[in-house]
Image (cartoon, rainbow, N blue to C red; front, side, top):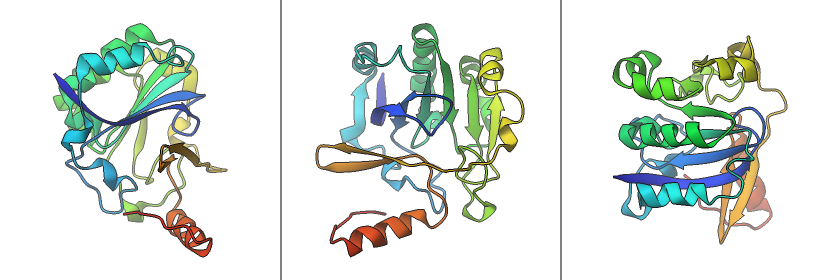
Length: 209
């Protein structure tokens, strides 16, 4: 079995509770207008990994068991359901924290098609990104998206009212890997345009969607 992965990163401090490991799947058939990660849409050959080799990479990742949890995003993780299911089963037996998964699919569709995966994770943030829906709510690109706590572990970590929590003091992380600068997090409306303009004023050329 193969798995398409864009990147893994630690620490991630703005996509779930605590200090987390982030795993970005590569490939997304939904392609919401205004998506902040269009570079993760194409399931190109360069992102294809042997699943067993990928798991071995995670096993040897020194911060995996120290992380407060794992956030899986993309791309669209549920576009690779077999790989996602096996990955969540592995993580459940290997980490102490919660597993949070992002999806652009509707919850009703996921519950119908992928109930087994939902049983293996703790937190689901789902529904398609809608640029006009507002961006006040915590850990979501648009306010139509929902946070669902799927386990007792999730309820203990996140508590009641998390789905209505507002995202105050929004923070972005940046990671330099080789010659590439990666953004981690969910920007507010207009933030990326301001960043590109600022970089241009400073004489920095930037490739962006």
